[in-house]
Image (cartoon, rainbow, N blue to C red; front, side, top):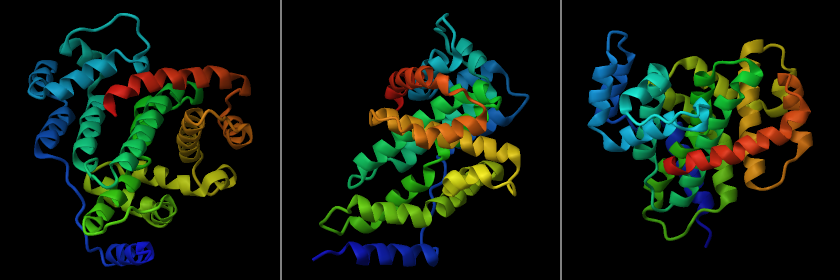
Length: 282
């Protein structure tokens, strides 16, 4: 007997009634994020606080030495890493650490969650690299790329609560239906709870327009460009992972963003480099 439709119906009803609790950021991470938001906080204070979390400290060093910062000189101290990365991106790294600890723990959906998390990291890292090509803020693109799939992770987390009593796995078809109907809205609610600027969630939501985004002049040009950059990053990273690049799906985005089609080969090479950088964070 196929119980999937019943589970999806129950899940949909639960969302409509808002009968669920969104996860909060762990207290320790929240304290660190508040510290990083304080303009009077010194580098020494940041270093001291981050040192208490060895895993986070290791991630900060890895990112400081990654292709995101394009430097040949390796940094070996946490202080140097903090100075290279900067205060605003550090908050994002703390949040990145929190997402993994808070949401990616479902046994039933762990492979799906890990795949989505890797896609999010790939999109975030590559979007930041695209920033110069599209003349946008790399740190802002990084956080948009990181959160562009957050609704999917939240949906899987909620489904896991219901699935603990079920004896069957859910098909990808059913998961895709749940994503299509709910991921944008539940993602926006989670970002609001986590005090992520509303503009970030609004631009991420523009993904649902797909190619119509390029022609919709009712949307602010800057927002369209940011959303198109995230869409290009997401699509190209997925295509490279599948070893198939469908030019007809990405070249309209190239043209809209003013990227030469000749840059495709270099961008594919960058994605392969990003994949190596992302591995320690998946």
